[in-house]
Amino acid sequence: MSDLCDEDRGSVSLALTWILLSLATVTVVLRLYVKLSLHHNVSQDDYTALASLLLGLITGGFFTKTIAEGMGRHINCLPSEQIVSMLEWSALSEPVNVIGIGVVKISVCLCLIGVVDKARRRISRFLWILIAFIIVTHLGLALVFFLHCIPLAALWNHQVQGQCMSTHTAVLAGYVGFGADILTDLVCAGIPIFVIHRLQMNRRTKTALCCLMGLGVFTAGCAVAKAVTLVGVFADDYTWSFTELATWAAVEQFVGIIIASLPTLRPLFSSILEKATFSPSSSATFHKISSAYKRWPTNSTSSGTRQINNEKQTILEETSIDLSMDSELEKGYTPNYLRAWKVPDRESAVFSIPELQVAVKW
Image 1 (cartoon, rainbow, N blue to C red):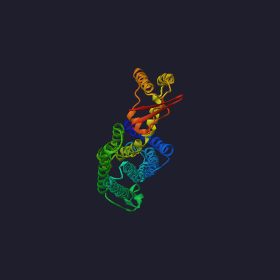
Image 2 (cartoon, rainbow, N blue to C red; image 1 turned 90 degrees about the horizontal axis):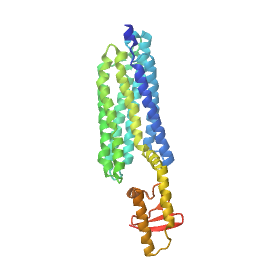
Image 3 (cartoon, helix red, strand yellow; image 1 turned 120 degrees about the vertical axis):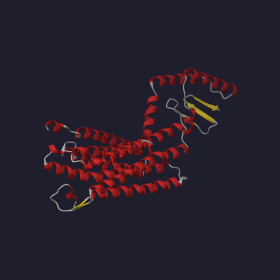
Image 4 (cartoon, rainbow, N blue to C red; image 1 turned 90 degrees about the vertical axis):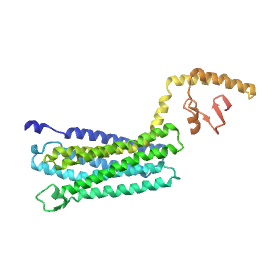
């Protein structure tokens, strides 16, 4: 019996959930930083992401209290007062968790609506219908959990007289809600495949966005795990068996927050990578090119221009520098080591380097 009472699932579940919640907090903070500092604009999906984080923090607090009251340990090893307290905090956390997951999915849908071209009104309308579906299903499931007993205290305190729906009815509602979550996650993960590849973006950007938005498949897997472990509510050792379901529910919520915010962090990652590419070796290469440019004559004769072009091409070939011409032309500026390269059109460019201005024709 003593060995049985030493077993504890709660500590591992608590550590996992708080690690994920911490990562979720960081991603949302970075998301708001990117939107405010780079785009100077905060949209609806950002507000819903922030709301989902606040609900996640509440869920984390409830989950922590539930673990402290004995969830994750065997029921025979707990005093009756602690079991009642654990059931109370568990009952309060379930509706908050359900609503939090729904808000995360709404944030993903709003993000997709912002990505979809305005000309694709059918997809936008479908996403708005999907948002309405999410609201109805998650509010309905939250009400089922919150109104399981009237008054709710009758759910965990048998001394309170009240009317309660059968456990089978609540479980059936849970299966319906989890099925709706799986469907929503798969749809949100699949839409980028049909939409993003048609947008005016380079292939690398499209692939990155599709992969990031497709991570919603993982949250669908969490919903499947919840459906599998839902039978634990019928177990006699409830405080032990319910831990898996509660953990998967928290993981789905926190991972959903992370996944919903990752696509918006791409400008931040791109900025970091651009700074990383300006290494000391690339700086030395820049000085080599710059000094070579200074040796070129500044006359505008055709022979002088041809000589400049030939020398420029030779230096670039010797140093093996890839200037990523196509992507930089689309942006209208060069990498950091060519600081003043303004491209008025795709036919010509002007290199404005100190002591030299050279017109180059493609």
